[in-house]
Length: 457
Image 1: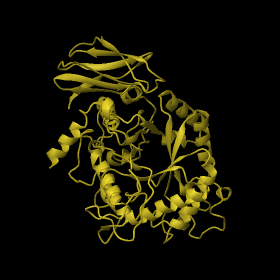
Image 2 (image 1 turned 90 degrees about the horizontal axis):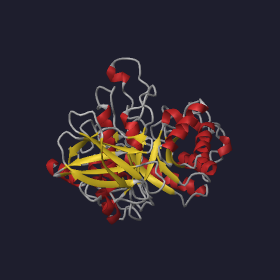
Image 3 (image 1 turned 30 degrees about the horizontal axis):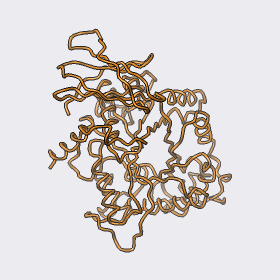
């Protein structure tokens, strides 16, 4: 069975991009460290940089605990929970959204936990059994604050992970999906109360793989939509109004074609698992309409992470291949990059030091990786009887021309292979004869992409 799944994932790369690509697919960027910085110069530089790379969308996690009064208290403060003026912590998000607006960037806001202690059932931590009713009031306040600036929302970051929602399991059965369904419905009601009922609201924001602590994404999907293991809807559960399913399809160091043995896991190499599950949910009348996919977090871990990280060259190549997989899937509406800079190393041994994300386009200290230029000018070389080249000029504003160069094995000299025209959105594709050991790169104006090797389909 696994061989068949791998074959299916590889076959998805062979489909002609012009026939199946979603023309409205857009790129999201999440630069958490920079945008949350207390230094306005750091934030402004990051926004300028993101804009210059050709990105038009940001994803921002709006943490309930950040803006609420007395978030560490066990006693509920006396305030109007639906009134944005009663929340003291909006300033950071005001600055982020104002900076985005100044640059013409659109924003997807993910309203999420951790939450104030007083908003949980036991009031002992900030993730266990958050109150749906209080969440509805908070989302009402957020909608009133930002509704004029935001028309895309998603509900809860990685609710299938115990860092954000608990408990994940109860008596060895998945329990977080039930909690999440209540929270999603509460967020919908909150946006309607705030006058934003017509905005797009994404469900999911699921982590890619499950284990004894994390509910696998498709098991989570079924549970939150009241579906059995064979996708039959339980009685008493109504259909949900879902505008899209958000997912984080991170892969492993094995690369973008990796397919997990657990059929409920969804990495970038097995996106068809998710689209099939969503179609089954629609046929079971668990959702009101066809649900497309928004990949709201993605990145490839690189060195210096000694456990999950790959080389800088592989990071650039794998990231671009992941983008091509998303581009060729007609159900994928958004692709993303997480982060700009790696998380700061932590004190201690290597397994602690690199316990965050090293998926940035820059190292934690700011030095650009090869993936930085590869994000601006993605390039994939697919090895077959001939080599198929696919790429994107992300900053392009309309049709443009790229110069494709090659370097043979053992040579340091780059030669021009050909010049090619992009489409109106900056995409291009061409073919050339296969040469063992040959590398490719793209030049566009003053910019040059990284050397890229050919990978077998």
